Length: 323
Image 1 (cartoon, rainbow, N blue to C red):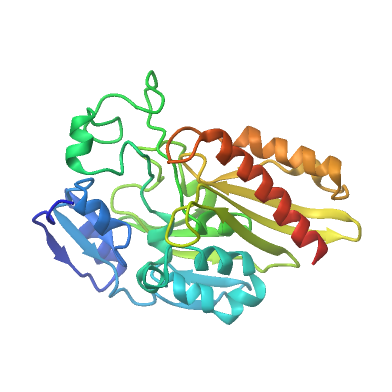
Image 2 (image 1 turned 60 degrees about the vertical axis):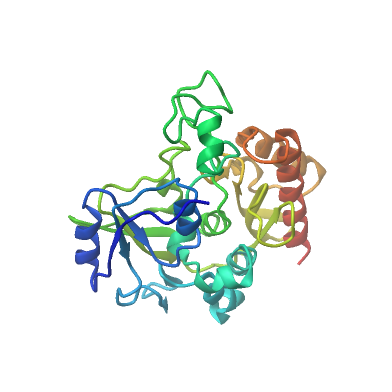
């Protein structure tokens, strides 16, 4: 690993100050730093300024929303989300996703906003400086070609966040602050299917909160496969929310992570109003297969990760259907 680069830090006390600081050339936001610091040590980032967001008022709060549901400040830790009674009771899939991130000491520091905005990953990118230089760098940083899809003009580094898909299937929206004010958008629209530029944030913008609507009878779950059952990023992860109407599906949302350059929703409209049976499972797993753009970006083969995603989706819906 490299020595830390020379940089300065600022710790704004308000959102407008933070957004203004982030418009400075070479500025980068930091809160828990669990994704940022390892990337700095590998030479993957060279910011001139780190903007510490931890002093922002309400940034780490979990609060009831006026219209029902919850407002989660982007600075709340994953540990706090996994242990929050309201999250556990109403949005168990979110608690499962937060609890599954890395290890206990990481979750005590890692924040919701940082987990959502984490960098994409690839076996040709998440390496030491000397390794990347010896292999000709890559399209994501300093190079001119993607080593995963050699003739491609875009980067296929993969998004491996756990919390994003769990929030997406619950209908979460992102509250974004910037130099010209605030805006909200469905959480899925925060992400772009491009490994080198996977966030739809303008200069100076930060995710300041996530809004969860009332659960309205939805049951949710999250599960992932990884090499080790702790610390490791997901090889593939699946989030599901389900509401039954007697013996038929009234609402079903499925999202996948660890397979594409962004967390993506799996089309499920064709299953609404139908029973969950063998035929429905085949339709769902085929939809997962078509949605997942799995390439050789991790230590495991693409075919294995695609099959794991299909199996996880079926297993989670089986479990929620029987609960």
